[in-house]
Amino acid sequence: DAIKTENNSYLAKELLDTTKDTLKEFILKTVYSFSKEFNGYTVYNSEEKYFYKLPDKNILLEGTVDCILQNPSEENSFTLIDFKSSNSSIPSNLYFEDEDNLFDFQMPMYIYILNNQKVPIDISNCCFFNIKDGKPTWIELENFELTITKTLDYINSYSEFINNGITSFISSE
Image (cartoon, rainbow, N blue to C red):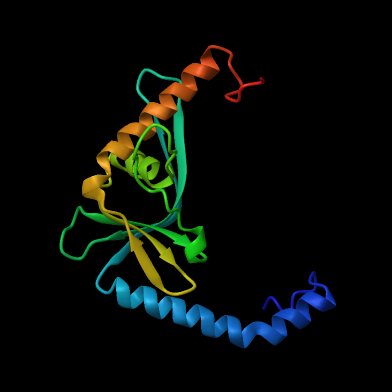
């Protein structure tokens, strides 16, 4: 259908036409790998925005979650998935190590937001799924509590800076 769309340029139509078989093969391979890895799971939600307002603060946390799967063995247990296009787009700094090394806060913030919904979404597993090679990179949630706590600390610190009128964190020396 995209090939036949009148709004596409001649070049766009030709590009789509010449790559459609490759794109189809890539999509089928990715869906097969994902389905094999998560056989038995059901889709709870995908591409959904979630919000959580921190109590007693003027801070609204927001995130668009790629995919939440309901685990087959437990009714109220879910797996959080963030799709990535390659291994290089999967963060290497997933866990808090020390104050000098900033970690990736995407997953800890998502987990915190989901756990604090009116009906909490209990995340028991979490991964980045590389659509290029069809493999997950699992996050060890048992080692993630400190990272979630530090994420909230950073959010609160940032909020305090803003409330105090400080708009730059870089020294102007």
